[in-house]
Image (tube, rainbow, N blue to C red; front, side):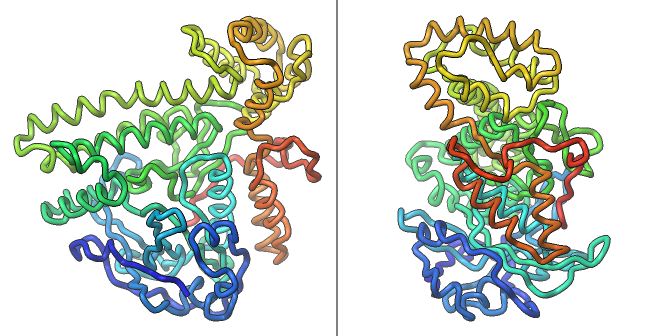
Length: 489
């Protein structure tokens, strides 16, 4: 069984709808995340029983659960939509994990809710497998993220451009509260819901903000800092979220809503994966700017709480928001220093990082392999060696490497220590898009889940240098490259 609590449903009823999942025809457990099960203090053996499968598929509601769908608004590609909400996701409740942290457990693809509009409330198998793979890889990289507890095939077909096999993802999060949740209350002029929501977020996520004079401004400051750190993590890994709408930004600072997401192969700051992002709004290099824009929309929603005089409230939130860029750049440079094996700070480090990225862009070098190759160079190797094979014209990287080795002389860490530290932050394996698509095809068209399980297993330990069969670290051949990724709704 699962000992559910339901604290969010103590908030004003305008913020959610009570709704049960819709039963599926023939549920089949694809994968249960045993490590996460243990973290949550759940019973893996029970989850594998018929009763556990019924709970994970939405065919039964566990005693103590009060299923709800969140209401929220959002700016989608810059356009405000005042009424969105969970159209295919249902929160079963919350559990307190072994570390004492409260975690949401939600079914994604669990059927229609009052927020489904014209949607069927279902999820296709492909997006469920994608989110399972990428969210668990992000966790292995140390990036704050929602988690995948289980993937269940439903035995039903869902209609998209064509009929597709259906699935349900059990998702775990620190919470599913979004920037759009605050926008929803603010757009309705619901002062009670807005204040109750903010108080709840402070108590659940930022209790330290409750001890200062202006608790709502302090909460906003914590959210800004969490997002600056999160986006810096994304950028250090070449990750593109794909659809950074305000309803896809979690207040907790976790990565949420893995739709048309991907990790870059060849480094390109203008890279876009979402099939509907025709103007590059959510391109890789735009992610810090978009995050700041989204946070400005949160600030607008919070103004009535921060100060009764709007002019003063605007001044206060602008002071906090104005620090986002510096917070992001500081966090990003710190991570990039670690990726380059630098344990000290030097005024020229930002230029050193920028010039490496420019060389990668100009000469079409693979993002992940470049940093992994730098990590793997023998401590006594003279010159960039095999690193140059990643660049179409090695002149730039050879010149850069000479500057890099000069910078390393200013660092007190030994070559061997540096190499070990770099191997622990520069992944050997990432969930490359062509691999994910191959896994999805095997599951959808051949009912073969072995490639999915193999990829999840490899990505669970993305840093070790031990031999692994299968070429998981290799970028796609030209005929394997995935040019667009779809969100799956």
